[in-house]
Amino acid sequence: MLKKALIGAVAALALSAGSAHAQFSDNKVKIGVLTDLSGTYSDLAGQGSVVAAQMAIEDFGGKLNGMPIELVSADHQNKADIASSIARKWYDTEQVDSIFDLVTTAAAVAVREVSREKGRIDMNSGAGSTVLTNDKCSATGFHWTYDVYAMAVGTGNAVVKQGGDTWFFLTADYAFGHDLEAQTARVVKANGGTVKGAVRHPFPNSDFSSFLLQAQGSGAKIIGLANAGADTINAIKQAKEFGITQGGQSLAGLLVFISDVNSLGLETAQGMMLTTGYYWDKDDGTRAFAAKWSERMKGRKPTMVHAGVYSSVLHYLRSVQASKTDDGVKVADQIRTLPINDFFAKNGKVRPDGRMVHDMYLAQVKKPSESKGSWDYYNILRTIPGDEAFKPLADSTCPLVKKG
Image (cartoon, rainbow, N blue to C red; front, top):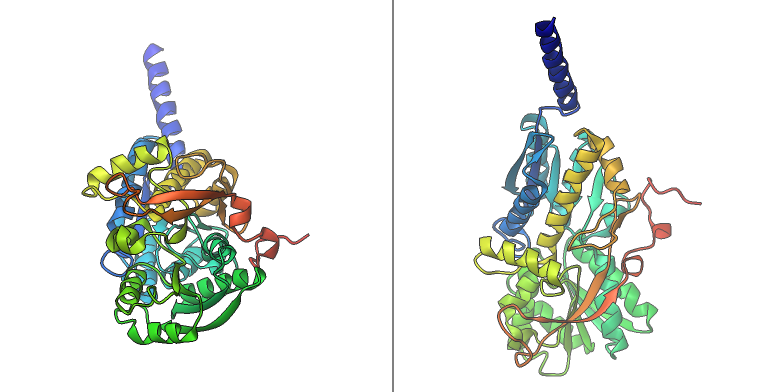
C-alpha cells in the first residue's frame, strides 16, 4: 500500500508540474532585444540595451517557475523591413515571446504590426513617436520610456518661458522627426511664441551645413533640433563651427541623451536644456543601477533608454509570473494591472493605450566648472509629473481607449 501511495504522489506531482508548464508554449520564456547595434542610435540604445535586459533577467532570478529565461538580440539597422523580418522570424521559428527597445519609430511601427498579428508583446523604450499610443496602438504593445510629447512639454516649454519665443526647426525627415517638430511647435505657439519655418534633413545625415545656413538666415532666436543621436551631435558641432551660437541664436536639442552630452563635451553642451526620464546620479536607486551597468559597459553611464529597457523587461517578467502563462494577450492584461515601482519609475501606471505614465525631469547641462567628475553632467531643474508630461488619455486616437 505504501508503495502504491508513493507512486500516486509522484504521479500527482508530475501532473502538477506538467500543468504548471502547460500554459507556457515551450517550457521557457524567451526575450528579444531588437535595436540599433551599429548606427546612428547605437550609443543611446544598442549593446547597452542588451546589457540592461540581461541585468533585469538576472535580478528577476534567471528563471521563471523553474523554467529558463533566454535572451536574444539583433541589429535592425534602423530599417523597417529588416525589423519586421527579424520579428517574424523570431516569433515563427525561434519561439520569442516578446520584443524590447525598438529604437527608431519606423522599426517600432513595423514590429508593432507583426506583434499584433501574432498576439505577442512589444515594449518600446527607444522609439519616440506618439503614433505608437495613438493610431498604431495595440492590445499587446507598450510605450515605456519617453515620447516626443513629453520632450516638447519639458524642453519646449522651458525655452519659450526663458524668452526663446521665435523658432526654426531642423528636422529629421521621417515620422519621429515630423512628430517631434509638430509637438514642439504646438507648445511654442500655445505659450505665445512663433515658428518662422523648418527644414528637413535626410536620416541619417552627416553634413548639416546647408540646413544650418537656412536656420541661421531665418533670424529665429531658437533653432530646434528635431532629431536624435549622431544627427543631433553632428548638428550641434557644426553649428558651433559656423559661429551660429556665437552670433546670438540658441540651439534647443529636443531629444538629447547623456551619451550625446558625453560626445559633445561640457564646453560645447553647457547650458543646454533637455528632458529625460532618467539620470544616473539622481538618487541611490539610479546610482546603483548605473554602477552595475557601467561595469559591463567600460565605465559609460546608461541613458534613459537603457534604464527603460531594464524596467520594461523586469515588469514583463513579473507580469508573466502573475498571469502564469506566456500568452501575449493575458500577459498584457497583467502589464496594465500591476503597479510599477523601481529605480526608473515610482508609482508608474500603464494606460489602455499602452503608454506607461511616469515622472520626467527637466535638466540643464552643467558648466565645466560645475562638474565634479566623469559623467557629472546634469542639474535637475524640475520634476514633471507624469500626468503633465504625457498626452492626456482623453486626446488619444487609440481605438482601445473608450471615450466617455
